Length: 298
Image (cartoon, rainbow, N blue to C red; front, side, top):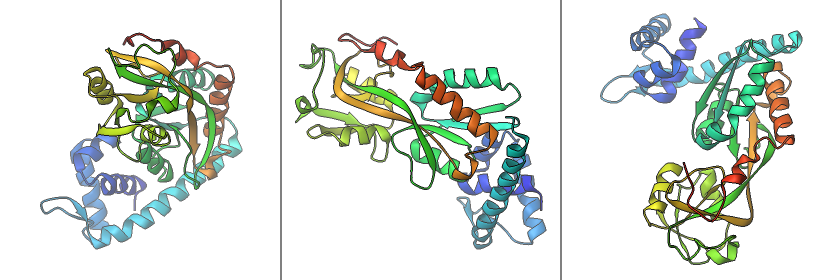
């Protein structure tokens, strides 16, 4: 049983889509199909029901547990060898929320790559739940998110990002130099869906009324600019056509998360050290400069 077949099987089992799995694995779709067929032939069982919509068979459901265990054990073995060798090398897969991937992560990766050029970096974007799942399943080594990480994963707070209220031009709050949380009581807001870190930032405040849910920060910003309501976002986020006003005393924690067993592996340890060093030097304070009482420029 080849490890690459198990890796491919695990991605297909998660996406339930051969095309999406091929894109994620950087394979031709025909290669993914051939690997699954080879695995099925070796096991003598169908792993996927291909009628109408792709889904796991009973055999596939049983296999995924063992595939996870085998692949995790392989990663542990590689990590043990890496730890003994002591110097970062090989591959490091990093996940991040879209906002952090754009504004926070690049300086960290630039510094990391300059010091450890032999490490091959892969960067992926995703929602917070997706990122945590990918770290747990070893599809990613680390991820950058807002807020506290789940208890079963290791994490470190890297810094804080100030929050701002974005409002349409002409809104009563648009002329403020600062907004206090109690001034938001009864104000209509747009928000991302529950479970999103940005939604948690809004829900922890007492008073804002969520009138509309949108799927992304980009859509939220456009809707605010169109006059549909207000929003709360990190100061680093650009929203052309909207007005940003600092939210007094409110910040979002930037967190780096990884699997506990990987804490001492050279690649992860070096990334953590790099991220902490940059945070200590306040390299990510540029988001504050974007906050003013006028429209935010792109």
